[in-house]
Image (cartoon, rainbow, N blue to C red; front, side, top):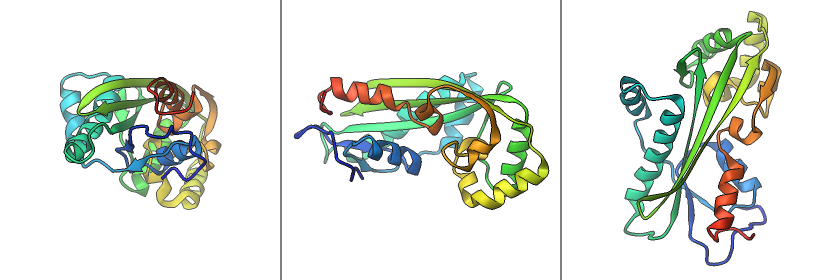
Length: 213
């Protein structure tokens, strides 16, 4: 990835995104970052169950998942890519004291939208950078969103239009697309809502000599 005019400095450490998220990759590419994609093989459900049993807060869940993803890739490539920066990221949706996972299928997506209809929820996005297995940076940010009252007819039409895209994100929506039709109000950073605290990440990379300042 990173086909846009890159602002990465010559000789900078390799930047590797430990995620299969198309949205995160597109954000980074549009920001002029040169990077590689290496999705992490992590049992997120098992990590969430462990954290839930420990009473972890949504922010802690997102941060732990982000670091776990980065660590999985870091361990996989440690011998071949010393000095590489491994970026892990995750997002959780907090609603009424609970965390909603990505819907598994269309009926689950419809249930999520009915649940959120007319109510406020929060998105928590976290990002972590590892270098040679050590955490060198982390950030989490939150946004608050209010879904307008949704009719069953609208939900059906929306899911017809979005197709499987509704299953790729928590809340069954992408705010940058048709998901904008779901909301009455949005408070927070746009990039955070998309799943990555991009501005703090760029600031760190500039200070770390990866990007032109």
